[in-house]
Structures are given as C-alpha cells and as structure tokens.
Length: 176
Image 1 (tube, one colour):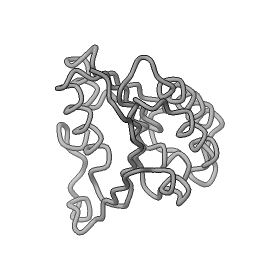
Image 2 (tube, helix red, strand yellow; image 1 turned 30 degrees about the horizontal axis):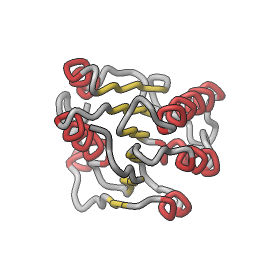
Image 3 (tube, rainbow, N blue to C red; image 1 turned 60 degrees about the vertical axis):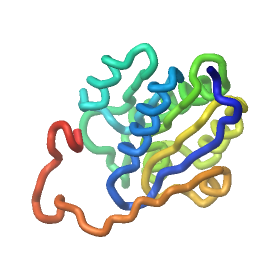
C-alpha cells in the first residue's frame, strides 16, 4: 500500500544516531511492505552491518553506498569524491521522482554538502523533484538552513557523551 502523503525529514546534529534513526525508519517501512532505497554518500569501504541486513530484507530494502574507502579531504576533496556524490544524488533524484520506492534515504547528504562535494542548490533540486507519495530522509551533520526550511520534520541529534572520547573505537555490529 503506497503512502498517502510523503514528507521530507532531516536528521542532523553532532550526535550519534542519524543513520541509525534512518535505518530504524527503513526497518519499520519494510515491516509494512514499503520499498526503501538508502543511498549512502561518502561511505566506501564496507560492507557495514546495514548492508548485510539489507541483503536479508531484499527486495524491500536496498542500500547503495557511494564513495571511496577512507576519509574525504574536506580542504581539498578529490574530483572522484565529487563525481561519486553527483552520481549518488542523481540516483536519489531519480528515486524520489516516484514509481519504485516509497521511502528514499539520502544518508550523509548533508555531510557531502559540508565537504563541498554537492551544493545546497543541487540538494534542494532533489527535494523539489520528490513525488507526493514518496517519503524523503536526509541525514548528516550541519544541515544547511535552506534544507531545514524545505523539510517537514527536523530532528537534531546532540552529543551529550560519547565513548569515542574515551578511546573506544567503532565496533562491528554497533557502529559498523
């Protein structure tokens, strides 16, 4: 059963849980038989736990990572990083225009803007292309105010305490 009304959600802030919240929404949507596409920006080097879970939930959940392994250089991004981000956004814009997916998640798209891989205008064009029955979620730190203004729901994750600061690395099954 398709969504009667698709809205735009933004999960931002410096706290942990933006991708996890989006995955929780994806899990709930799959439980109701909705088709979900998560496009991941700047996330090469997997597979991560969510990729393995998506294989089990296919064909309802599809996750497509775009990005090279390692970190993007914020001060001097590689042209390949920009190319991959543009490719990911084009896939997202195609997906939100309707017909196949009920929920489209652009994971770390706000981060891609912050790293100079995408412009806010490119992301806003993707939001504008959203069909009425498609839910769109955009995650990542430092969401631009114009993206926030275009959203119907905005949640800011705020770090209060994080075990990374005590030297605990990312753990398989929890963070990756």
